[in-house]
Length: 235
Image (cartoon, rainbow, N blue to C red):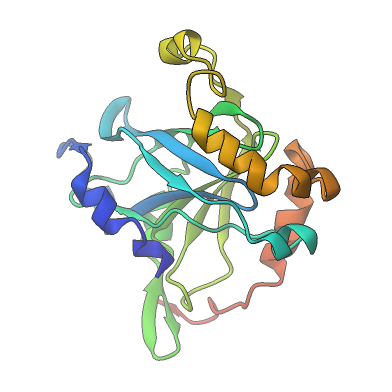
């Protein structure tokens, strides 16, 4: 269900796709973005292949924060951001994703080189509960402090565990002319941040969350507990 949460939104937004590329990398794939605890807005997503833009999404999708009990009980897991369709777009070799973190009050940019065998990983099928599933949902997760992970997901109740393909600390965006003219929290997202503070401000003070690379072992432990349903690969 999460994989197609934003399908209708994605179809209504302006998407730019380039049909040229390596035909061997054409597979059925989608992408999404989310967080493990934060409220955020994805403001830009651009994918490249061999130095050329093959897909660009202007952003606009926002997600609410985690349930109160998850923050209190320190239940951290990637969620939100259904996979947007990329019909006819070749599998990229590089991605740039921009997201505004309400917890940090910053705009971050994830810049990542994707694995050369990404298409093969997406195409690999697994027999799960009587059907074949693939990890063909490219997911970008952002946590407080700029920590990010890039993962391959299968369908809900499908193949698992999630496959980590990259992680690091996203760069803070400082070259956005609009942010310079209308700073975040001053002239942008004012109402949204006010509501965020009202809903989560005291909660985060009482139950502070990790920051930066401190998330790495936490998310590794989360994946280690996921069911291992990738035991029957389909050639």
